[in-house]
Image 1 (cartoon, rainbow, N blue to C red):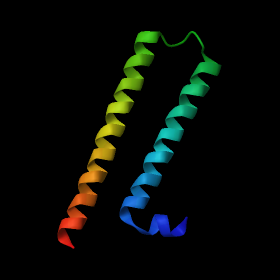
Image 2: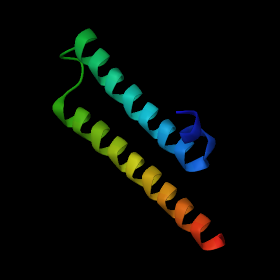
Image 3: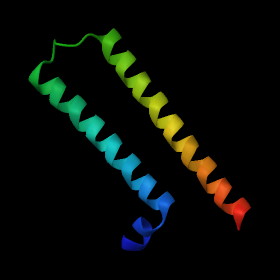
Image 4: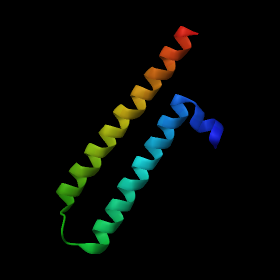
Length: 72
């Protein structure tokens, strides 16, 4: 685990996984606390927005990895 976190890309993957875990736990807590508090439309927008954010995050990591291989 430590060797994974020593590289920049490994650290970025760990941060991405943590972010996804926090989002899923947040949705679960929201469903338990206020099951009728958020509508399907709002929830859909929230999930799609988060997925777009994570897509951009992982694409930027891929670009970072490609830049590292070009420099080497």
